[in-house]
Image: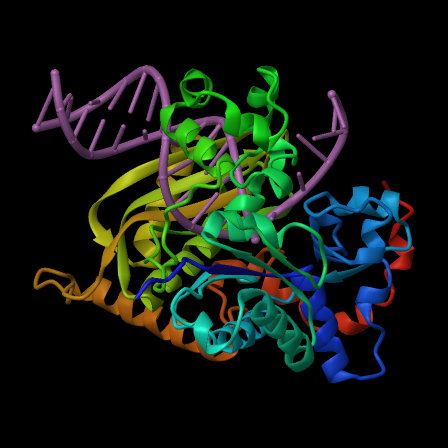
Length: 426
DNA sequence: TCTTCCATCACGT
DNA sequence: CTAACGACGTGATGGAAGA
């Protein structure tokens, strides 16, 4: 039996801000709805680090944009109500959303915390026509979960994603093949998925400003500028071509990273090592939780002038051990860091493989066995009480320079109300 | 010469 | 346009190193 391909893309409007609002209203029905005032979710408003992760519609009217520094946003809109992010809350609402969506098809690809693709090709006949069905989903999410979404309706993922981005919020849009010239081709090149700043500049350099112009040009002319593979991809995209299937199972991680911007620049090895230990502990715990091991450790630094460097090393044997990660990370950093003050340090484990048959080697020493047991115990306690409960001894003496996201999520509903007194500095 | 490794860049949420 | 802000993740690229 013949099926025409049909993909929905669901995108939560201002996800973090919407979810923050819903959560607060659930806790206190009298609470102020952040969506009705100029507001934003930011990393850490108090220390004036961080960026705008999501903004309300009223904030948008002041020119506040996602991704911009909080200080800049506050200059544009001094009355902006900035609240800290709570990822545990967002994961909760994301799960509710994905569960609801799974009522409509088993073919779901969770694309990010607030986005999903639904392959509706084989199930749409159970519900009605695509437009009506999408609107029913949109209304049901609003009614049952309390937040709005955009839904793109199209024959493939790329077009569905483009469609969900059209007019916001709380809207459904179609983008079928015959609608491409009218709805997609007039758009500026930058709005095409996968065209970032760099590609935008290169394309505009040869007089291409709209998606339609990109679709019309001979792809051979793009290859020398963008590289062969990338040229073909975005040219296909501009033509509405995307054969990639909706992937039901998310692929296993290729890497596990953890990085942090420090509350002040660091220029001594000891402090840097302490930060590395914290990062390695997180990464190691995640490796063990997923029952995987890594064969490569990478250390990344960003200095005071935003200059980024990274170095990596291949391990003698794959590991999930915090200690091994830490020793290698320290060695790397010591080797390549020229002691320029650092604002960010990161650790990344790559070349991931499965842990299944990596039982304790016969030659493994008693000491490393004990080490592993200790790490396992730390992981267990952390998973029960949160990552802040246990700290290694070396943390206890120094003042904490690491901005732990987990350590600033208490008392936030109160502190969020007194945002006014910190706009005096620059 | 062919592959792998390494560092960086680009792109997305 | 510059000044200046995150924490992730993936994949491409081009040069160096190794087989």
